Image (tube, rainbow, N blue to C red):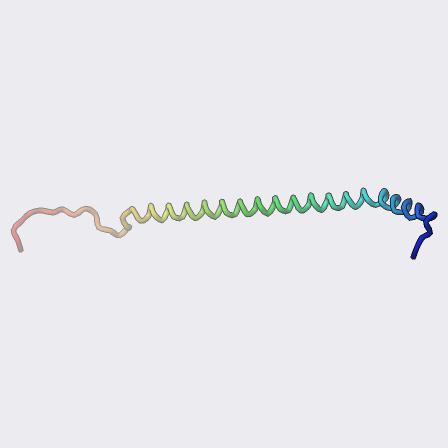
Length: 89
């Protein structure tokens, strides 16, 4: 639909009014969406970091305990044995 040249200002005024009325709420919604996305990204990054650090800590603790147990004698092992030099049997 073509608008005559002399009535084109009406379309411009309508577009300007729409922009003034709707721009602030739209920008606010986009800003809230951006803030929510940022919060979610930081939360997921923090959780991932916490899981990695906790998993590494648990793995290192278990490995150290296992190594300490391997260095000690088992519970059923015999104690010191006296050795004497005597006649051969």
